[in-house]
Amino acid sequence: MERPLWIDRHAPELSELPQEPVRERLTDAVSDPVNLVLHGPAGVGKTAAVRALAEAAHEDPEGDLIEINVADFFGMTKAELSEDPRFERFITPKRKRNSSKADLINYVLTESASHPPVSGSYNTILLDNAEAIREDFQQALRRVMEQYYEATQFVLTTRQPSKLISPIRSRCVPIPMRAPTREETVSVLADIAEAEGVDYDEEGLSYLASYAEGDLREAILAAQTAAEKQGELLGTAVLDPLQDVGLADRIEEMLAAAEDGQFTDARSILDDLLVEEGRSGEELLEELLAVARTRYSGDRLATLHAKAGEIEFDLTQGTSDRIHLAHLLSTISAPERERTA
Image 1 (cartoon, rainbow, N blue to C red):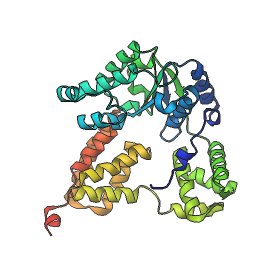
Image 2: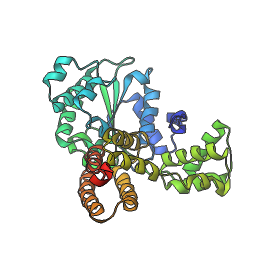
Image 3: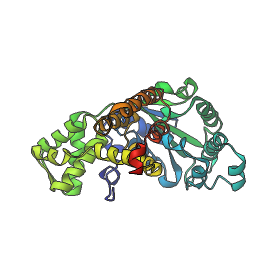
Image 4: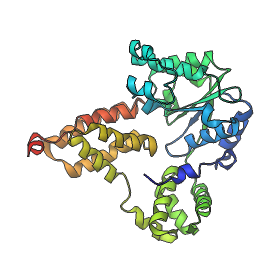
């Protein structure tokens, strides 16, 4: 999306977080920077809460907060890791050349934790979607956490805290985050609408809250879409612009790119959906199959369903959504007669 997203423009401050227990625990962490695990469903504001914590805790939050989306980070190539502006200062050409990808990832984690903060006395490292960290890397992370506990605060967000090894869980204060209530979602949307100067009523915001089904991120994106298309958020009309909005068009585009062998383009769309829009792997797989049933048939559809079954099992194990879905895309190509027609 070219336009500024409301979820970014109206990111909450610590005092504005809608869930009181989360707000209180994170406020305590400003003066006592312990390691944390924020866990809860997708779209409830885990990442936004950590950013709010960093804004309150650091004089220079952009310099002292290092964000690593695990699904993206562990799917990077050696070249991508070494060229990432967050890490390129750590990685010399010699190290890139002589290190395996696993060694490079461990090195980046260690250097990120040991690097002096820009301001204050410690860094905060956010590991988003931490359920995707392989167990061997979790063991390495545990050692880094033990070694640099005075210099770095680690904050992990996850939908599946049980996927974290017990030594990591024991070194972190757990903060559960539930799906927001309808009233909490309506309150957040009302504040944003007022800040944007958009007319609204409670009925319209209630419909948006119901549409999002407990996903605050989805509610805000839906409100922005409705406001931009209609100029207001009033009554049942808020749902009209959303009838054609969803994953289907993006999935169609992603599948078309994969069919044409444009896997870089297909993976780029996948990354947008996983990272920028915060979609879960399970959600994308379900929608991909729904779209595939309208595009394919016969053996081709049966093969895709069989492969998707394997991917679904892998996703439940908490490994990288990006890697598994990208692998599924790589198996999709147009039949030979279509490519040569």
